[in-house]
Length: 253
Image (tube, rainbow, N blue to C red; front, side, top):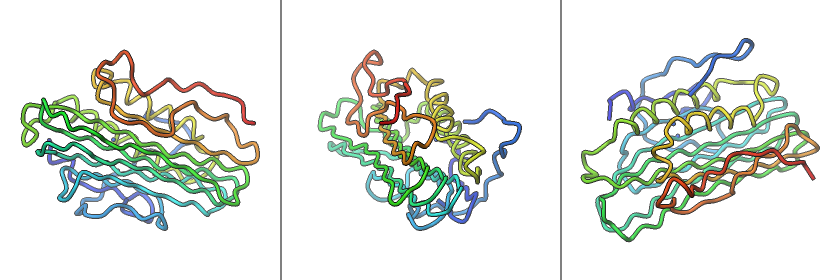
């Protein structure tokens, strides 16, 4: 994996976990700030992105964000790559978002890529997305957990080139989203569609994908919710039966 994956981007107040067409009135992605990546973002800090390639410790990735600012769009993401060399493959990937504001949008994205030895059978990854609104008015809160659990011949050295490209593309997209500041610049559904376009460019990896998303809306916030699962376990063996359904808007109760 390229050394370029070892930077951290902090686009708001927080050094914070994997693409982005340009817009006319929307901000462009900012240049990264080079720093050491050692901690997971805290929920009481501001938006941002952190990218860590094979950090020490267990295969766990968590990102949390709470938005209490009126008319703010906040996005935080954590991207982590892990190698598992033991016979137990049980990585954890969790995204949690809390909205407690008026006319606001809150997005937390946890993106995890795990490599394990081909032939291992004790496999039980966890991939969870949790979104909650507390005293919210016209707010949309989204949590999305994206987890790739990929068998390779040698977890210590094998990094498929398409995974490298996917991580760089997702990092670019998430940095763009974390640079957005106000509710009117982009909707949460547009943000999720941008992420989905990145994933769609790497459908050859969909057999290893677990994709969980939960959306909470308050007081007729628009647009309508997307039909993603709130949690997903180990991805299927075939790309024909993925845990990543296409989003389809439904009416708000």
